[in-house]
Length: 209
Image 1 (cartoon, rainbow, N blue to C red):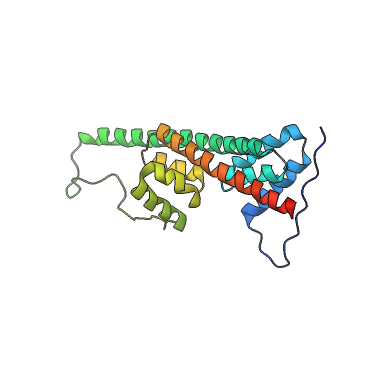
Image 2: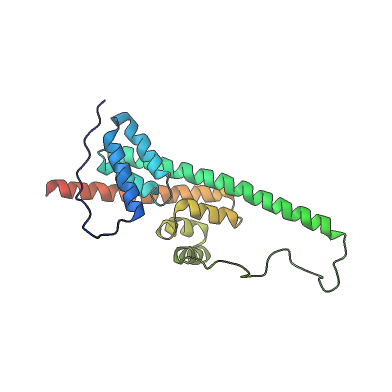
């Protein structure tokens, strides 16, 4: 099945700075227009799996590339969810390994007397020692997590940090991965739907004009 021609886009204004994420989305859109129809949902799925593009950007790529909005939303959301699932599994395993290693160290040192002046020494590094300053997005996410819990932080998280990073932060802090996956899935469905409907409405307005 022949590929459909891509929608023409005006060139960037002279001297304008191109956002790397916008450039990546543009390249995905061009790719969607160049491949056969049956392959287009796969390209959208891959776009949705890329952090900073995610389900919202992937859905926009699909809609502007000529896919049916429902197909674009499902493909982009699936890619986003698969990425989050992989991050959750890897982060969960890494955290379990760290916890096990610390438990083994505590068990080994439990029978040994601490050197004079070191009683009660904490295994963790002193608060703030060598810590990098948090980004504005991370600070907002932390405030939402304290105020609204995992559900609220998951739903609002895409406004501050990409969903894979949100999932990693939640699992790394000890939140059960099933709970994280549930609310990340809800957030992905919500934001992908919003992006899909917005892109489709914008396309209808442009077409009418």
